[in-house]
Length: 74
Image (cartoon, rainbow, N blue to C red):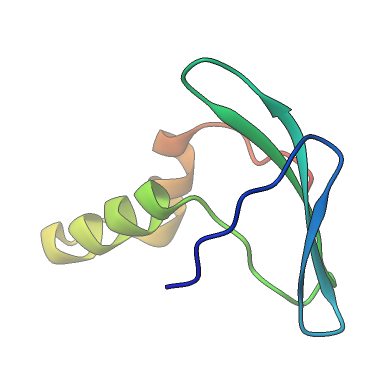
């Protein structure tokens, strides 16, 4: 794992297509922006964990997305 220190407004580049920008640093959180091509799927880890748990329980993909809230644009 690569660990970097960044200040608000600074970026991390992943390959030629992905840019991660530190937007704001708060006392208990960091807000980041991700610029990536539309074909790349970017999700929060807990959504993947919920999908894996739902698959084990036999819940469909559609039901998982309904439970996780609105599908907001990236």
